[in-house]
Image (cartoon, rainbow, N blue to C red; front, top):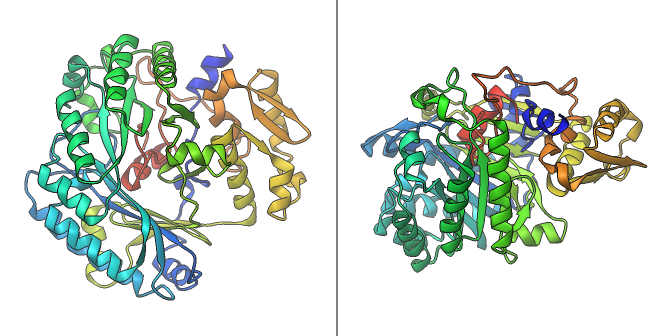
Length: 481
């Protein structure tokens, strides 16, 4: 059955192209330093800061994090983070303007209020942060204190992404994440009270004991809190690669058909509640930046997932963080201690990257439009990049197969994914991926596929979770992004 085939295909999530799996040590600290020195002085940039700490382990999570009950490791890491910010800011042409900042993790809200305010002040000393900049942070509602919420507001944070996953207590127990609706609602209330007015929720389907009914109940509870956005990610069970997932009882995981039903039910419920579907896995209120970007054709897809951020440069700070410069991509050392060692001796912590070719750029542009708009005018994109469409002729056979299977309409270079098959958008994007020979399908563990989000989500590994620095490492190293 074609719908099942494309749903289960082992494909990248295409937050970036090429994927992290194509990065190599040929691009290291020296190349990154050169790229930084050649940055346009007046172009706004985005900043991503990765904080890889949590208070407890969620068994579904595939991101590399450190579990700590103490603040000392976090403070030591923050010192290295500040040093890296200084090192980078000393290598750019002048004080760069910043329009977007994102704190990801882990749980970056574990940073204490005073320390977070000091970090933001340091960033403002080293970069020209716009007064209208989006400053976002990922939050675990279970550990958010009123003091930290007040500190976030005082520091200028205006968007928060809250991990919810599921409100079903049976599911929560099965994944070791007990989080009540009251805790989440209290977090939303205290954040809004202190000026963090834009709220995102992250939800997961395909978890153990999860049903269509429990997914819909979770969504209805979430919608009652009226977040501006919701991201819906599918759990991928890969215990051979993610040790903590071995604590999840695989026999209680829904199969592929059940997962598809859960996703569809959640999407229908959110749309009925007034949210607009954005790309593959996001939903937003009509006045949210993502919805407005989609309306005006400005929706982007980058290492943090779907975004309204139009900056061409993303500077990543912290262990495993990924950056995007005009010449290509870079990634910091993944291991926290090694990252700190590099920074301590005054050396950039870049461990690998990819220098973009002209062919990479045109393929990335086509893939981004497909992922954002579910269609792409291939000849027009090629012309805009000074490329001859005939160079992409190898994609025709793959597109013809997708057209034969009823996934796309393909005529005069315009590729359009049929609405009922939008879940197969990654298979369409893969037709333009020069690093792939065609569709491949995963070896399954038990009866479940080993899919994952491009980090995301996110990210960010093989788990379809919100994308950010560490998440990208796991998702992309194992499946590619």
